[in-house]
Image 1 (cartoon, helix red, strand yellow):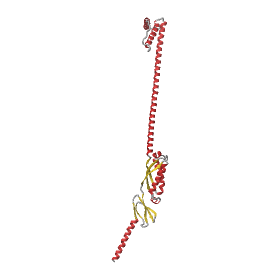
Image 2 (cartoon, one colour):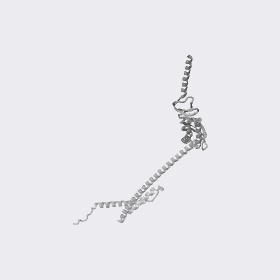
Image 3 (cartoon, helix red, strand yellow):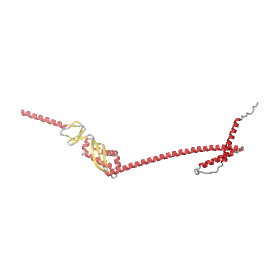
Image 4 (cartoon, rainbow, N blue to C red):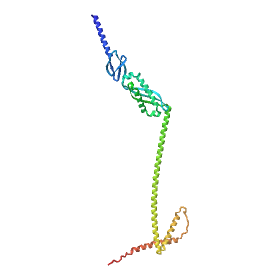
Length: 324
């Protein structure tokens, strides 16, 4: 009897242990962000999602455990020869995500190494078809072309390449020095052009100012000439009036009018000799009596003119007799 109980106890314990082992082997807990592939007798049958899953013990087994989150893959530095035969060192990063765990596990072997080699090869292809200047100034275009090519190539593997970024492009030291010299020359050229443009603008403004000044000066001379002509015209009118008055006096038999003209011309001639810049001292025989007589004639003409004016004012104006 004790032997039977002991055997039964062993059987129960064995059953319990077997049940625990079956539960442990048949229940799989998948963490968030992960997916497991299940193989039955070595053949893929399904994929376990995050959470608690049940499989058949001893029949099914976990094949591959894949990370479904976005992953960063560093691209090591490599030398690239550009289209203009410049050698540069390039490195970058790749961002990818597994979308189909079965394809990622069974369509490619060593998925990360395959994606890395594919990216490095396309970097050499894309950047080798560009000049150095394009390489340094068109990183966005390079990234876009790489992303398009690599994403299309990795789609059958169940991968989605979300982004490819070129981190560093390092030209040789001598090429960097040449580029620095070229940049300095370009800046010096722009500075020279700006200085030349400034001088040109200054010359234009100066010429405009001189033009305006010449126009204003010409207008001033024209106005002055107009004023001088007007003054000479009035002087000529006055001279003509004076000549007419003297002529009337001569016609009336007044000899002093002749003396007036002689004295005026005599005095004008003396004034011109005195104002001459080449003759500061001169000797000229002068008939003082004649000059005094001429001045006396002028005074006589003035008295006669004043007397005649007084008589005209004193004589009352006569009115014609009125008709009855």
